[in-house]
Length: 51
Image (cartoon, rainbow, N blue to C red; front, side, top):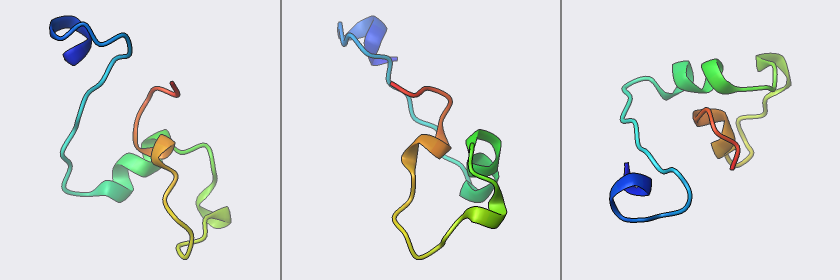
């Protein structure tokens, strides 16, 4: 966690996952039937914090 050791004011972390769609489904606020695969990804859908 860089915010503890490198004096970064915002928390930062990384999770490497095999199935990114499962992570997206866990954090997404947009229902699957409204998603459009042709658009750029919403990176907020891949993590718990909205900083």
